[in-house]
Image 1 (cartoon, rainbow, N blue to C red):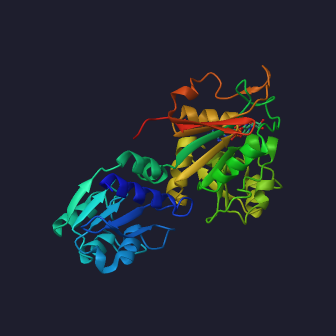
Image 2: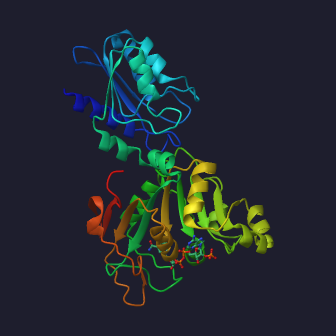
Image 3: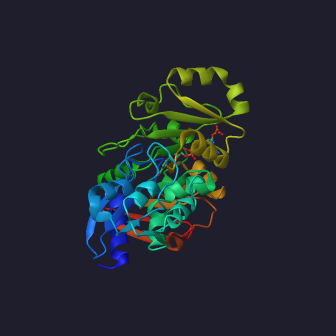
Length: 362
Ligand SMILES: NC(=O)c1ccc[n+]([C@@H]2O[C@H](COP(=O)([O-])OP(=O)(O)OC[C@H]3O[C@@H](n4cnc5c(N)ncnc54)[C@H](OP(=O)(O)O)[C@@H]3O)[C@@H](O)[C@H]2O)c1
């Protein structure tokens, strides 16, 4: 096996924590003996539990001495909910550490590597860095841009419409595509919609038929607090909190509506303007959200697109035709699915999923 093979193994293991580690990153680690045998491996299973490096070293035991540790992220050097990994690595007698990427956490950011070098351990950085960065985009986006990684999701007719007419509930996707969408809901930290979608569709916004380890945060962008207190999403508190984003002046102007929503368990996020960018910043800072699925509708999609905060797009294209009266997807905006980076196309029964990143690696 080559060093790239060992790192791929660590990356594969890291992915097994998907949906459970937030706000922590996905991390995998593999310990390789001097004669090239994998003697221990592990991954970070959920926030608060042992780090991948510790699991791999525990599995390797004395066989780790003189070996190489492959890890998908810089080992930590601070005391969080668990002890610093770099100390464990040094005391285990590891001779060389190969890490895919530096940890952007200000508490680490190169200090883990420095500690290892100071303790006579060889350090190599950058093997499979692109894959490791993609793997942890929510974590990197939250730390580098102080907002969650945003995936815009929409179901489209073949002629590029998301609804038959403004405010009209228009089911488009097949059971197979719906199932796919629910599985993805189980992986993200939060789902967001605009109040127009609450009023038109009255969605539950839960991940149905999919195992989810952590609570799912639901966010409603609703400055004027028009969400009805009997909206179905407010009956799903066992799935996770419902946050209503409003602005300070609108919250003051609609005090009675605010009180009624809070009585139903909604959590109000009062921002200066109710703008998407500001709200996302608060959701990352106050709620530690790393990933957010923006499910619509048209107005909120467009606002997020214009704010430049859409990182990935996931379109379920269906065979329906809605015609000129339908509500267009991102009206008057330049959007080509062919321009998405890392574009992937997958048939889902009668529908087709097109997904990809809006920006190249960053
Ligand atoms: N096909 C699909 O994938 C899909 C998915 C979802 C919805 N839909 C359809 O889309 C339609 C609803 O779309 P819509 O455009 O009417 O409503 P929407 O995008 O769901 O909500 C728009 C409302 O969000 C509020 N909002 C709060 N903060 C905002 C911000 N920063 N920027 C922009 N808006 C903000 C605004 O009301 P305030 O000014 O009062 O705050 C605005 O009127 C329905 O027909 C629904 O069935 C389709």
